[in-house]
Length: 202
Image 1: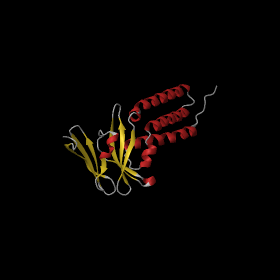
Image 2 (image 1 turned 60 degrees about the vertical axis):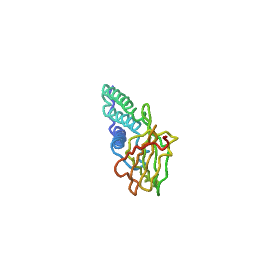
Image 3 (image 1 turned 135 degrees about the vertical axis):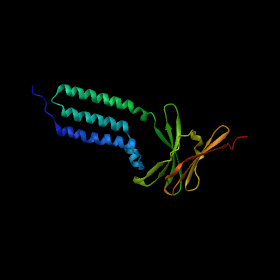
Image 4 (image 1 turned 90 degrees about the vertical axis):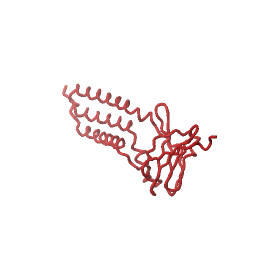
């Protein structure tokens, strides 16, 4: 029985999208982009990574097609790689974020509040979005996640056209988190914190 011939064109057809998907995962995990469209459509590292590994494995399998043992090794390695990537990707699937509020600001700007989930807890994070259709952009304010219940989201507000603040009630005091922005909505500097006695305390 003659060995099965290699099929390099089919291998190339598998390899090209595999490399494109792998590059997408690398870029979205290492480069922070401002475009909402790219963030929403391309930031799926687990799905894209699994597809890249599967297509890459099929490409290599076509190249070693005449050698039965090599085909078996490639299949086993591909399955092992996909299982490993699924385990590695659990940290993204177990830490989802959901938009829970949007506070209209000046012009096309809005203050976005997201609920960022961890393994056993969640926190609120802030960003600024410029609504420009397909070219909409969003900037994280770079503040550490803070503890604010959904019923207290009215404490997140705009202070003028170039500043946003979140007032976080605590037992006997409150923490004021503020971020200054430029005219386009980009954060200037880092978050500043002020702790003061709670207005509701006796």
